[in-house]
Length: 270
View 1 (cartoon, rainbow, N blue to C red):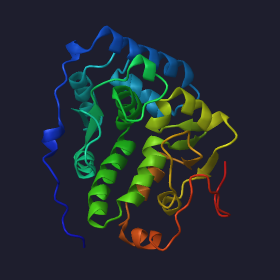
View 2 (view 1 turned 90 degrees about the vertical axis):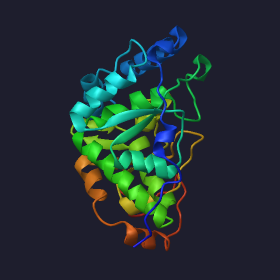
View 3 (view 1 turned 180 degrees about the vertical axis):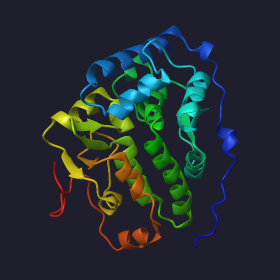
View 4 (view 1 turned 180 degrees about the horizontal axis):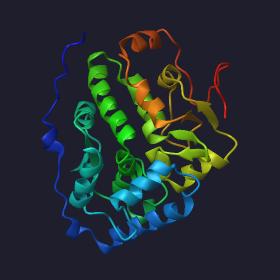
């Protein structure tokens, strides 16, 4: 067994208390623009669980939500709370938050000139993209399990493998439903361009979910995805986190790393 992972710093050190009244009209207007264009685009593209989460939590077009109100509603649904942070936090702190059903949300929002591209997550990506799915009990359990798995992966020097799982599910995941292919990944639902690219463009690969295949596949952060992985259900996704990943990491160290656009003979293609 790996040694217990000790956090590099106190997780509370990264939590901030944003003043909702301090958001400017320009910042609220940016939220409204982003929300309205995704609201027009996502019906028939986003999965029902995401759309239900928006409605249940009351995430609306009128402006940046009040974090405390949103957190209280979310906690009543699945026991999750959101916590405001300045931006990206250390890996061990991030996993600690998830393992304790706390999701870190960046408090600031992009500038109007950054409407279509932002290198790091902002409030719209985090709240609109991530938080609605946490209102779904199965997905919420998956995220908690992921956090616990992340703390263990740190002790096994295997974080690179687990990061790929997060990227291809939580950020850029697709799900095959009775109504057709749908989006659930936060990096897609919060992006107009990627919402179109992932379903309509013939270039990217759409491949069946395969845990080890995903964890040996690199990804890119500077363009639309070359491959998306498609789950059959959120139960399938949660079940994938149930086994001990230690032997998986041992196996992955013997496998070659794959490029984002690689397709293997055994891949299920959609």
